[in-house]
Image 1 (cartoon, helix red, strand yellow):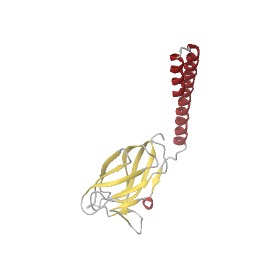
Image 2: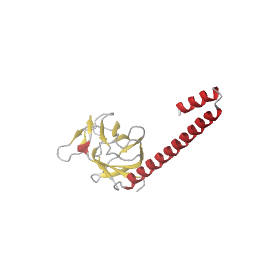
Image 3: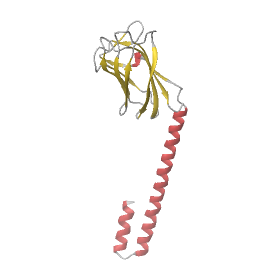
Image 4: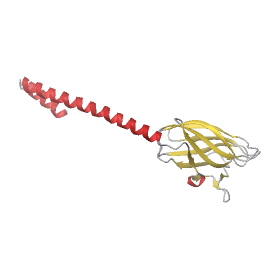
Length: 181
């Protein structure tokens, strides 16, 4: 297109108006073809994203053994993530190539009377926060809300923000439910 624009100006300067008009018309045709191709590309990407979303399972489970740990340990017997002793302790999972969008975040955890605190659940750009409350009857599930995921193959991190006494919680797994399901 830049070459056609330069040719158009050169021909107009040389007073070859018929040639300049022909170069302008060809440049305009190329611009229209590019615009049409960009629209088709956007449509194909939208269809691909829709197909990927439709093919998603009803829930995605992130297990403790898949996490990279920092200041947290994996309990040998149950595999639960425990010993969240101080703020900044975290567990990080690599997301399994999910399409961008909203996902309900549910954690299954247990928390004794002297445990608990606040935590954040985040990806590259967005974060949810909440509390790990006492679970009197063993492990239970808590919905932390909908997290917008911008990079479906990026990290998902749970970070302790405050710790009540000696441990935030025992984390059994993280469940992601696509918002469109």
